Amino acid sequence: MSLIARYDALVEAGTLRPDAAQRGALVLFDPILDYLAKPAPKSGGLRGLLGRKTPAAPPGLYLWGGVGRGKSMLMDLFVAHLGDVPKRRVHFHAFMQEIHAGLHEARKRGVEDALAPVADKVAAEVRLLAFDEMQITDITDAMLVGRLFERLMAAGVAIVTTSNRVPDDLYKDGLNRALFLPFIEMIKTRMVVHELASETDYRQKRLAGAQVYFTPAGAAARSDMARIWDELTGHDPGLPLRLTVKGRDVVVPKAHNGVGRASFWDLCGQALGPGDYLAIAQALRVLMLDDIPYLSATNYNEAKRFVTLIDALYEGRVRLIASAAAEPERLYTEGAGSFEFERTASRLREMQGADWGAA
Image (cartoon, rainbow, N blue to C red; front, side, top):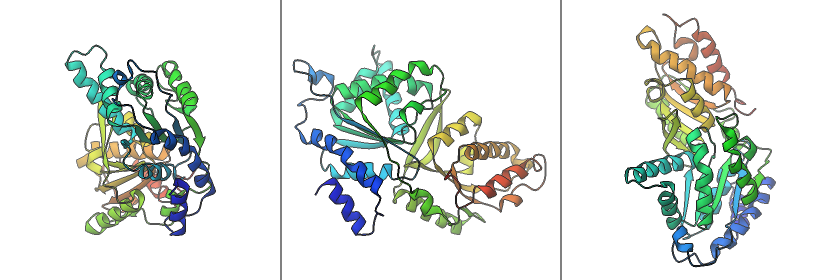
């Protein structure tokens, strides 16, 4: 069965809604399917290429567009279609964290070019890497990713990635961005760049008119939040999302396909600041936040961080789904900071709107 036939079958079964933009994009995977159908090199990594003619460059695909258009769904459909081809589907941020960990270990062993063994290990294990939600927010990733992709491609690894941004907007306004521009050119010359311009935001469609703020926090709210998580992620358990901000790890405990889930204390109970919350807002399109407590002088620092978090989510047009001790206007009613919280309460109300995050 072809990839398009699989898509049509899902539409016929009612699992998917027919979407011309999605169906039209499926042909872009055909060159990658043809490439992966050919025999793999006998040994992985660059060492396996020595003494032989350099193979044709592997095809790649950079699929970008607005949130909720079905990019991740198409990529998952493609990955599932590959059968036993050695492959890996992973969130881009999670993959980069693994690369950084590998670099650290290689440097401890005194390896002069730490990237070489790390990239070669990946190339020996897979023929396809499928990255979800490519975004570059950290200078260490920006300075590394070009060399990493170059080495993986040279070893014959095909790469498919989704992103909310056109390549020219990656690492936009980032520090020393001029050094990152060659990677953008690599994407545009070595990969097919395609905008998935579906008119429908399916993620917003699932949430349109749905309750997204649950109070009081408790067993019933947790059950409702779990149901929404399953609807948005297809029952995926999620993996920790680790973002590097100024050399520190900022962790969202569960994330999948741009949807993250954390408790109030995960994000506001530790010393995080505006830059950390901005990184979260850039990495996620939906944040599910559990167990927002009553706020007062007894948890003043946590309350200040919560205000900063909401500001970052608001400015980033991130969809917020939350459980809380009370309605927004009753969360913070007395003590220092309660007056200033009125703006946050107003934003929490606005962010419950059916069309929030669609703009």
